[in-house]
Length: 384
Ligand code: LLP
Image 1 (tube, protein in one colour):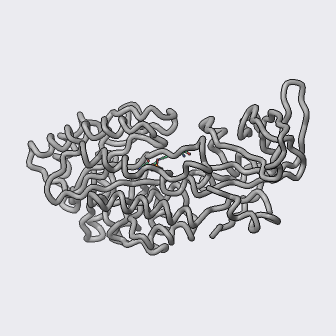
Image 2: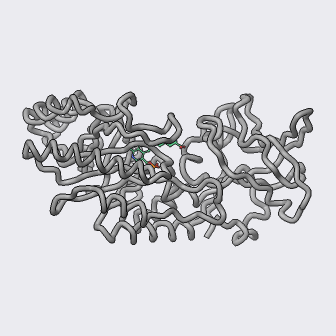
Image 3: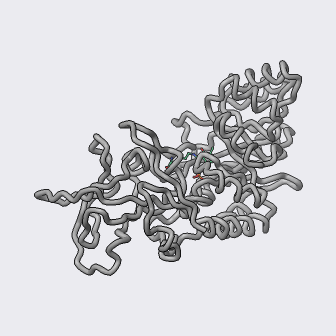
């Protein structure tokens, strides 16, 4: 994201403020679409990454589907104009109310995560006189080599159905008249930059599909999840994800049946690079070992550094021509020691009132904010 292009819009900006570059979003969506269309792959946007209405509108206008993990996300997707035939509903703990609402909306598919969930969806679908289409989320036991909080595909994680439960699941589906099994669903984790992980996933998916083939159970859809990472270290120079390489891996390694649909659910790679959090320095405090730059943004606005020790590049936009630099711990105002955006960050000499940018916050930034300490939510500015 190149903020220099938008300098005039930033002059009197009220902070903290999330800014989203809608031109970069457009470029990213086109790059993804072109790469996926090559192989006739379908991409669903994982709404959990960002639900800003302008962003949803842009993504839906490009004919992406929607991957939702709550009843409210399903409603947000439908309200934003996503076609109900392209809305999937995933999650380990869907409530009866959420399932009922999604059934009433005739969404494309439920990604189911347990035996008991199949029983309940069957019951609720029966009561509404509907047939619920489902995909089984299987746990492929592939290590995503990412932060353990965002690893989801290991057998120790709460997600998905394990291989040893499959016979039981199939028996249950056979006696569930209001369930239509249309496919399989996989997701191994997030912020994955090592494409080998996806190659490993393909190998596991092929093993699972062979199991279904052997039992002559047709699978119309293979949903291979999301997880493609972005470059948090070079947000201004490398902000377009290599979708070509990502989809090429699946095209090369997935054994695809004629007519079988291949779906993906991407979040971070579509919106991560298009956002930044702008904040002003409230105070500079000199310590013995370190200096603190205390910002008006905190972990309530951007939780990732506190929760996952995630790296986000930080720059001082007010001192771009200053040559003397110093190290600062860049922290927020919240009463928690984990409220820190970066330790020993090399910055030009920084003063009260300077405008700071925390890059790559388009995904899992604003959506994970809270009003802890009774703080107000950060403002939002669309750059175009
Ligand atoms: N599909 C499923 C089933 C998922 O659980 C997720 C993300 C996605 C798709 C989208 O993954 P993506 O393409 O965005 O990697 N809050 C964390 C990330 C949590 C991701 C949860 N699941 C973070 O800030 O890094």
